[in-house]
Image (cartoon, rainbow, N blue to C red):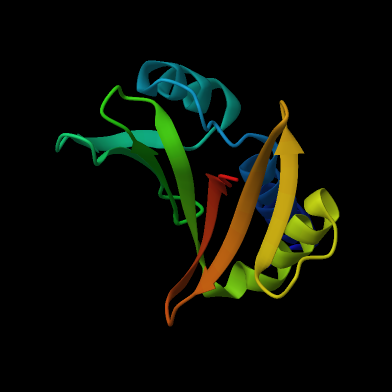
Length: 139
């Protein structure tokens, strides 16, 4: 692989990891999420919406980067948590970006405050992918 292609690929990976931490979307209505993902996360496309009362979600995929975004929604269509799945080979880059964005994490957990609300970011590992989950912390 040429050096230019390697640089471009690394840039895309770093930018995509950053965009996961920069925008958490929690508290937004599903219509606003669709609009913002289209503008803020190039490469992601709407895959499907599943409605089942109080446990609905909308899903976006990025085939090029092999990533998936799932926005969990309440009965009003408002986002309550976000899950972003990455290939396992991106774990070190994702973990470094989480540390850079939120400070050194405690194990696989990071915390941040936005608009006077506290949020938790959890990195879960599996055999084939890692998942970054962002959710609000209730006191």
